[in-house]
Amino acid sequence: MKRINQYKKLFKVEGSIDLKELKKTYRVLVKEWHPDKFQDEDKKEEAGIKSLEIIDGYHFLVSISPEKKEMNLEDYADTLSQSQVADFHHKSMLLEVTFTNGNTYEYFGVNHKLFKKFVNSKSLNNFGKRNIFNSFLYRKIKKVEVVA
Image (cartoon, rainbow, N blue to C red; front, side, top):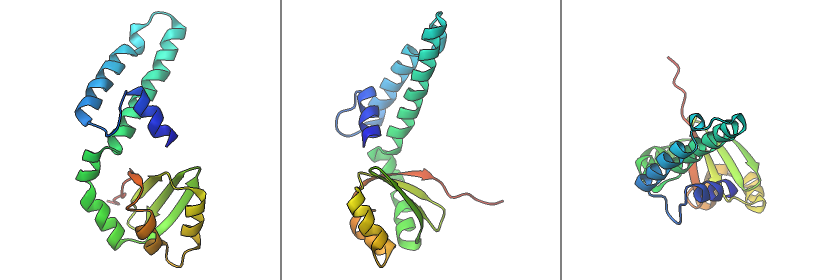
């Protein structure tokens, strides 16, 4: 959640994420913080770091935007209905779940108490579907790798 708030603050996003507005703000920020604009080496280095933060923040916010979630809803529903939980990790308020189809999702705001219930449940899939997968903000972080 901290990361979400940090990037929303950087892009001056209040409430829901609008991709058109986000893209406009992104372009302005990239122009403003482009390292080639600065002559001083310290400023150039600072701008390089800030540029990377802007790029990371943009891609992160796009990945959790309502439009992106809507586009990937069918794939997400297929993952939940046809795959099992293969692996999971919890750190702070972030739960990362990998499914047997290879897709990995991050769920934001999952507290330690709920995570313990998830781990100790008889069925990770059923508990996840009822209490986590459709209740928390999520984003896909890894796609299925296709072996050629």
